[in-house]
Length: 386
Image (cartoon, rainbow, N blue to C red; front, side):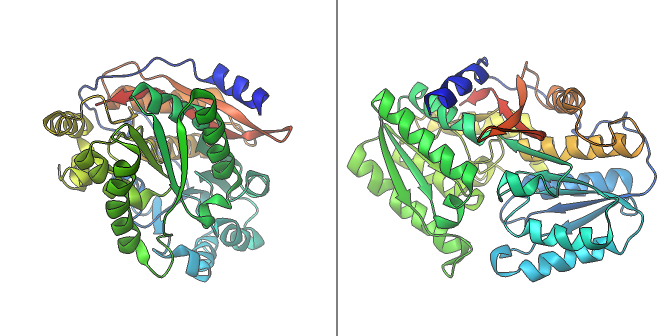
């Protein structure tokens, strides 16, 4: 574990980002036409709006005859058969050359196996895979994810920068069955112990269980003030679930806790909904969301207590993956493997168009249990502090 932490420390030499500026269109205009089609599969909107927003933008740009947008079932844990059917439908279209899945939730591997029964020629990209990387790389040509291993140190370090003396980690068995998330939690606990921060391993309802997303969100709204009453206002909160970010931000702000970042780091994820800033169309003006968030946080007396990554990763990765796919189709990316330099450039270009600042974006290949997965890209980025 000490070797892991030393390795992580070497990855985290990033400058803190504390300001945000104007926004340019997130879809680049210099990505040319391409033969065939790209199938883009996103999570349900109630879980992750960013990916759905980007998919609609890409369909608008290239046409619904070039970008085919599919949506995973809302309760995907109980609807793996529907996921399989989606991939079976994609497989019937011989013009589909690339499949991009964001997010690659539980059940994705089984669904992709259905595709691969008849289509061995499709280039497959996973974003934020929930299943074990050792299984993912048997199916995906590229897998991209925030670096959950370095996050174990990074998130705790950020929480400490914001003044945390206690760290509450909300999750549930389904997520803790994911190796990367479980190991991140273990690293968080070890780092907290080394820094003298009390670590609280808190259990929350699974939104895919019988309580549903609404029940899980209500739990967060009720539990956060209880935790702050026990541990004090210098308590940082983190949840592994996308659907819980909005109530978590609301409760932390109202009860003066600390929020280092959402599970899927972004200036949009949870913040706009929590502060009632606007609807999905505000994704076109990220700097407005940031400045409104900054104003609301200041009025609540919470300046310096909430933060996130400076660029919306859901939008950035969906955009970059699509642009990389077009280059692959046009013979401008390797037929097999991944051009990390090219992928990094596509992400940096998106960030440069989106926020008026120097955002440091860093990818590394995943090394897991002594195995180097050279087709798995792990993302780290600097912070925006409100």
